[in-house]
Image 1 (cartoon, rainbow, N blue to C red):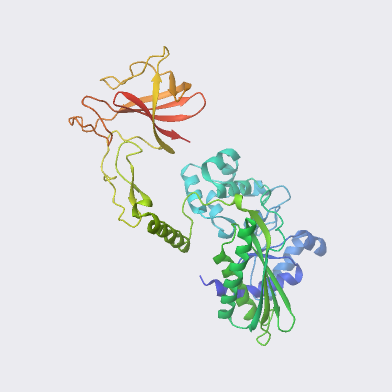
Image 2: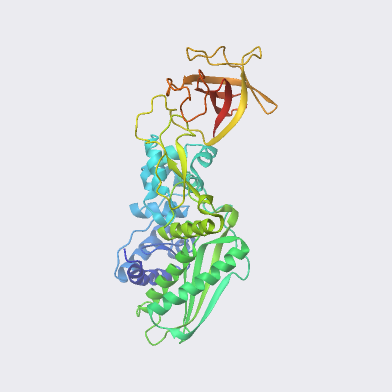
Length: 457
């Protein structure tokens, strides 16, 4: 897609809407939002306002659909259906939509939304209403920040609630254009410079920008303004892109309020209209970064290697093995990521999914109801029913246990197997236990004693 072209062709539509109802905000070229209350009061009703806006857009040479709802995101989906959602009915309107609809509008979602909807579909969640029925705590603990945003949307809850706040003072970046800007390439350079200055101020204030106002003054004294609204805090590159797009639309537009060719831009100002605290920013749970972000991160890691040595930065490689610790090996950054063992080979006795979230290797004592140590017999069974687990002075009672699962690897080799140190005649086995405190643990029996191998979260 050509974003510069899209903005250029969309600019007449924005100007036409602005003439009827000010305060329109651009989500992306082709999609804008505005508060409907004032327009509905002026034109008589929400339906009348929608009709007038549709006529204005048609006069600008385009077709559109209008949607009205309590919340911004719901209104976007209502526009696709040409619907006016009754007050308080956002959740009901959304409930029957497919869960995959959550990832169809990139301007409303963060990185990784496609992966989220795919995962929810595989879990059997087919509609937005079924997703809304999940508890907020379950969604937050299992899926990450963007899933919480999607869940609030699915429930029809207020958007940008606790995180959005007024920006601190002096979060503007101003550029006096000398010579004045009359070409798109000059606009791109100015946008990059202004974006850098704005983001330096944002970082110093510890905030990120989610609504950006772009102001321009022309040589004839015309004042132009456009507000861009974003689902995720803008990066420096994304800010520069929006400045370039907007100036391209203004500079190449003669009919709808943009400066003519003989009235170049003499002043530019970027203003962070809405910001979020840096503490609210969270990287995606899975992927979602652009290629430039990956390259920047890699360059930083290479610099660390140059300072501390090639072994200082290790990357994980999925390997073959039966236990969770054996299935992850590490190689220095830059080396070929060769697994220590082929993960595609059959691994009889491999621990089933899910794997523990945290891997440790701490000695523990597994005891029966009488306080006697539990061992694994030659038949691969517990010597008694486990009842308690002691570790580092703590004594926890068990609510549930499963296993043991013997690891019969290289039983003919006195040196043992499973990638673990062993002694002649030793046995290796694993078991899962659930403590009364609700902690789920993975235990490993080797060299005639128990070790805490993993913690489930």
